[in-house]
Image (cartoon, rainbow, N blue to C red; front, side, top):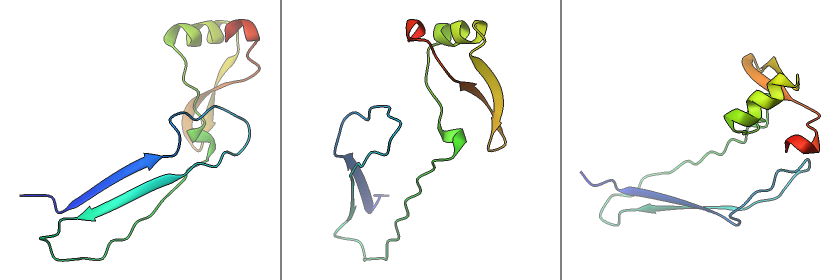
Amino acid sequence: MVNPLSISCELNTDKLPLAGQPRLIYLLVEADIDRMSAFAPLNLGLVVDVSDSMLIRLVTEAQFVELASAGLAQEVLADGVPAWRVENIPQTLL
């Protein structure tokens, strides 16, 4: 069976720098319905989650071990989910 709906997405930038301020980005979403199919209504919803549990920094295993051994990583509950909070990272560890 052929999928009659094709969706493609494209951001206006390839990189999103980590910054402590809002950043405006554009997302182009194109939905294409197979021309041989009957048309049907399409509802599109966008959810942007900015809760604390989404603020997860990515580090390597070695970086995490170094941060934890320096006492800079504490396990906390973020939105009811266990997570690691890392604050005040010295420049030497970055």
